[in-house]
Length: 448
Length: 106
Image 1: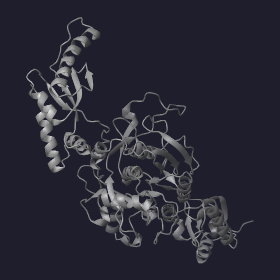
Image 2 (image 1 turned 60 degrees about the vertical axis):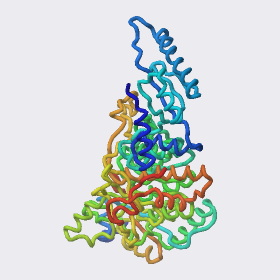
Image 3 (image 1 turned 180 degrees about the vertical axis):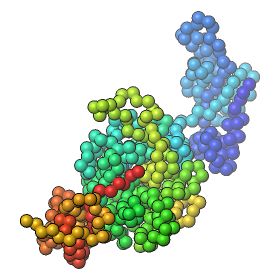
Image 4 (image 1 turned 45 degrees about the horizontal axis):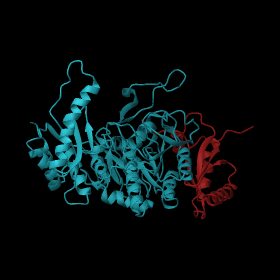
């Protein structure tokens, strides 16, 4: 007999002691802790030894035969443990029930019952969006709060456009400020939107329940003007969004080195002012990429040209009120080599935090046919792609803000931008391997 | 007939695409932030910018591009007047930036 009850008890006990991250322990412990009584019932599946179908036996006859055995088990369960079955699982030859560990022990010791497997049956609401979800602690959060998905939170993605035809994305509103139709999706914008809000059952975004608003401030090719971006912030504000996710920026590196040559020594450029005003005047949470210019900036320093720029950070990432996001590698949490370092041009410590941004798998625009129409039934391999950069870390943080905001609303806690920002940076960040001008307060790590 | 003026200074040449004439710019209001609800603030901002630009005929503002969050308006300046116009705008306490397209994503 393969009885995993002992394993379940062991890992649950281990999880309680250590707060460990073994999947089963996370789920078991979270349910034990969430229960109000001291010895709560856990959802389990009790599986009997396999029943082999008889040659020629149809499903109805097989189900009747298995059903008799499951009925016997249910009767025994009621008699010895005083518990009824939650459901009979005919194809699995198993029975689902809610049992305390004591009741589980009674039924396991019953000589009249021969169980093949006892399995914990948690309510799963998560699959890993690549390694990003586990890196930021999402599974444990969702195990403790299964309904947490950003519902009721309006998030604008200011980018190159989101593919509304993608089966994993639900775009509730769209507007363009760049002169290109919202019907032309950008790969960059679609990828960022998926990290934030993908509803794919396997590659789920951080906050799939948010109201996703496409504010197209760049062309699909990723070209943009500062005025398109600031008009996009206006459009988002006019639409009463709670959060803006901005995976873009104008860097300060000289144009002859491939930089943007943006000039903002004091945080008063139009991009930074727009972000600061959106936060302080209109109450939005502005999550902005730090930029991917550390490598290029270091090359300039090596070439004796370090005096030609005042910060590696882009605008509006360096805006005082932004939540400025750098990126780190998955699993190792090492800062990405390209992630722009602080401080700002006037010496303020940024970025504010780092999040996974290397080789992130997320949504890609649905392939189009010759007429520009989405190809029906495109394979999944065409619907998801990997990308790297602080652009990918930013929507992960925006999604985390949406979860923090949703929880605040459900509890009736203050939900203003400053409070949510403080809650994110104080309670949902863990130390990361790097100095503060590289990783800020640390790496994003949601706390259950 | 327009008389050709001096080319823009090196500061701007590197940012301008070849042959760009006129040059798109944004002009930013750096005075006190208007109060009130969004429509009232927008109207007050436009009025402030219109007044400020009255003495700068070299700027052709597009009043449909007033950005409340950035406190700015987009416009155009002839390339041969760029340095002089920007110098005067900045002397009047207005922020100015070239509003040219840049590649923002990889």
